[in-house]
Length: 81
Image 1: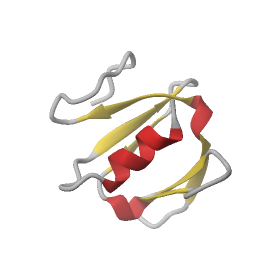
Image 2: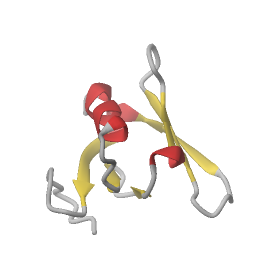
Image 3: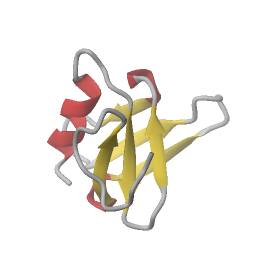
Image 4: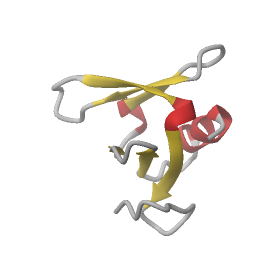
């Protein structure tokens, strides 16, 4: 996945919750743009924060296979909710 695609989704207005699907089958639900930080330039990384305040995960964007949107936008081979 291109990091620009992820940046566009995070900056979309109005924001629509989405799920990040990784090659290793992990999924990260992004309910609000404050729960993700995408490097503005340089490294292809994103930091996903737990909405419960329990921690965070650093993701290599090259491992993102797709983004799934609740309203049917985009696509997911993984069938994320």
